[in-house]
Image (cartoon, rainbow, N blue to C red; front, top):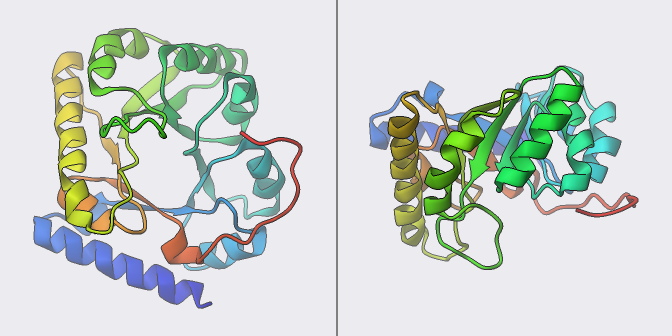
Length: 235
């Protein structure tokens, strides 16, 4: 598989979506979602110039990250259990999947112990799917002040995972709703939230048209997942 050609194709699609939306392509970051893929594939993608990578499982990340180039930047995008927070604070530069005040408080405590400031995104379950984690939109607004008061956390924005559908136009309203929620949060806080993480391999162009600033692309870069190294436990 020509990973460099895959990355180039995605970047062309990002540029095209930005053009349709009247946006500068430099306002959209491309994250390579490397969960399920081995270090050698990550190194090949890094050789194209990409430096932002996302992982979903702590145990897998602990094995892989030390085997990858040190210049790479890693963010947690999967559901995070409270008993894995200590490792997450050490491994990742940002946690995109903060889905409760209790998790945020645990992250804040561990960041304090590590003398770190940790950027976070709030994961929002915009579609209300029972199979997915995330805040309900109303809960985000209700807990926003408490979340923002945690001294060791920096709230940078919101993240969502849209429903999987064949017709990507059907997810447009969910992306639009997250953008509108971000604007409400900004009004409530009186401060900008620069990151809107939405859009994956099948729907990132629609997400960009609706305001995404960070798209998380795995399969369209790496192909199907192949990484099978056994790990001690799963998230």
